[in-house]
Picture (cartoon, rainbow, N blue to C red):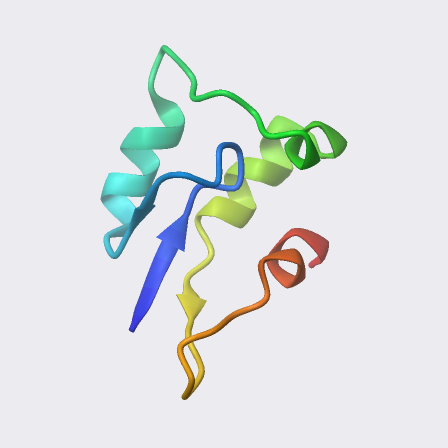
Length: 68
């Protein structure tokens, strides 16, 4: 299963890129997590639009997407 995750709030997940764009482009922004303050809004936007591919045991490394 693959999906998108908002890197600004880490609460919103969807399997549709269009839905993620609507979430991160809305007027009333979601609250930033403490880690999100280390990145610019553009970096958070771009990393939120990267598809997360789960491996065979359905785990992934959240930090890997932020560090790319």
